Image 1 (cartoon, helix red, strand yellow):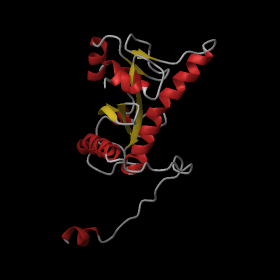
Image 2: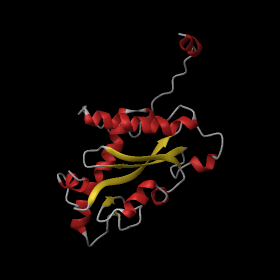
Image 3: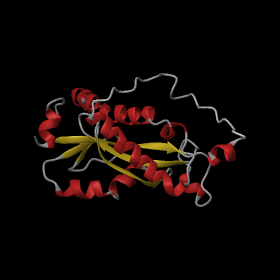
Length: 199
C-alpha cells in the first residue's frame, strides 16, 4: 500500500503521507562552544529536532543536527526531506503555521476556512502525540541529555529507532501525565560514582 493510501485509512487529506514538526531536546547545562546558538526562545539550551511521522506514529525521518536557536522553517528548508518532497509530485506533508506553504507542505489557514482548519488540526496532532510518546518512553529526551554533546544526536536517533521498534511490536503506548510537562526530575548526586564504575 502506498504512503498516501495508508494515510487515507485514518485521515482525509488525499495527498498527505505524513506530518512534520520540530521539538526541543533540552541539554543538561550549556555547551562549551557556541552557547548562544543553542539557547532557544524559551531561554534554555537545546537541540531543535525535526521529526516526520506517518498515520500510525511511526517516525519516518529525523534531523537532530540543529542547535536550539534555529527556526523550524529554516531546518525544513535545509533538510534532505524537503529536497526529496520537492521532487515528489502530488505528495504533501502537514505542518504547523510556523512553516510557509509550499507545493509539498500544507499548513493551517485562519478563518474563514473553519472546516479545513478543523480537519487539518485533527490530522496534524499525530506528530505531537508521536513526539510525546517518544519523550515519555525515553525521559532523557524530556528532562535533559546528560551525555557528551557529540553523542546527543546519536542518542536522539537511537531513541527514535527504538520507538519505531516498539510500534512494530505493538508495545503499549505510554499514557500522558499532565504533570509531566512542568515537573523536572531531581538530579541526585552520587558520591560513589567511582565505586560504581569500578564494578
